[in-house]
Image 1 (cartoon, one colour):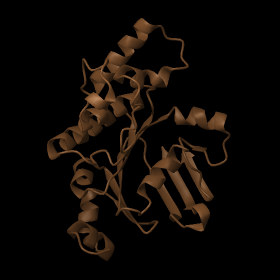
Image 2: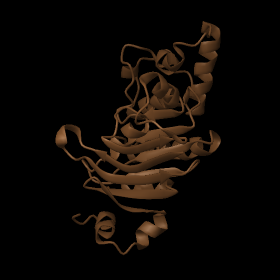
Image 3: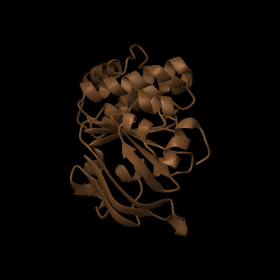
Image 4: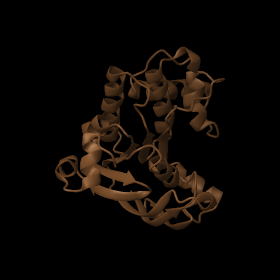
Length: 241
């Protein structure tokens, strides 16, 4: 579903990603881990075309998006939904308006739109909140509304930027279960960025560890636990890396 080939990202001469090559299989939950500033979220932004690599190729469903026009890129982005770390809801819009923002250019009447919003919210476990404002929602509810907006266009892939950040343990577990459920129910590819080891191990089919802009490990959870690589061992045990 996604592939990065020899990708460098060096804004203003500052090397954020250094020769990244990575293949993410269709249908898997792929978790990218690393310390703050390692370049994890940068990879997500490359995958949905929010930024462009300075060199190398970024493929989405077999299409290299690095040189696409904005019009062509918009078509590719329809395949990829994203949940931002802060949920990134529009504060001045209701929940229903936030979710239906994805359909703003579609020819859908208000009755149809209302039903589509209700159905989409029910997928993420929210009912009866259509008329609430973001300020009236808890952190976990905001994340789920953001996720509802991300799946509104029926994407082939979902990108999650620190989906459990700032949430209490119970709410975090709810979000993690939702990621697994949506991955299976919607038959999507899920790419999750997190620095939380327990969260990663709870949901990942495969894990990549990013350090100083480079990938130092890719494999299953069990392979990561057994890896005889100092950087990986220290990351798992909380040592210095």
